[in-house]
Image (cartoon, rainbow, N blue to C red; front, side):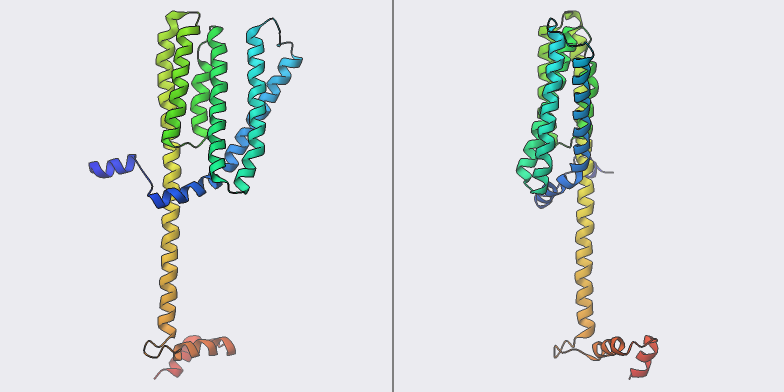
Amino acid sequence: MDEKNLKANIFFSLSPEQKRSFQSYIPTKVYTTEKYVAILVAISQFVMILLFLFGNKLSAASPRSLGYFSLYIFLFIMTCIALVLYPYTVKKKELKQFFWLRRGYTVVLCIWVLGVSYMELVGGKGLSVYCYLIPTTAAVLLMTPVESAVIFGGCWLILVIMAICFSPNHSNSFAYIVNSILVTVLAYYISFRYYRSTAIEFSDHDTISKQYDEIQKKNDLLVELVNVDQLTGLKNRHYLLEILYLIFDYPHKHYTFKYFAV
């Protein structure tokens, strides 16, 4: 594989016309998966809220306890709002609102992850939540390379600031920064591969559809050439015989051709 083909294989891109069609393809591709992901998120947050309310985990004297509880309520409410608006934008084919809703919900998830990570940092528990939820977000939510770079890059920058300013053990700050860089790069790579594979899938489907339409047009032209006399523009004998076959329902068409042959 030469260098040009290698770059084309890695940095796959759609034509301007395909990009416009791809915008309409994305809702049908991701709607079902992302809807069920949002439902699971809402259920998990609702369960955590119940555990805090009835499991003696909520304490007004504990800022961290109130912080966790507030984050669970925040994500639950925002997810419920997204679940109401998400089907509406798809059914009404409001693509602009659809994409802004998805971007907004992705930002909400990242805010939640950063909030929980802050609680973990203050408690001296590290960045485990950030390390497994940011790549998971990249794997389940389809984003363009630019969107994922901005969102994940912004998350990493905020996390670094939190690690430097709020970590009780500053000797671990360097380790937090290094680990978060690796996780953020991994999340971007996952997101990029997901978007690229979806774009390739769409491109292949679009190419096959266009080839099928082209074959259908050629078949229609062939039928016209067979049944129409090119000099006069009138239907020819072949067309007449086809009509006779349909009227009389001859069982042996090829023998009839021999009979009428001259």
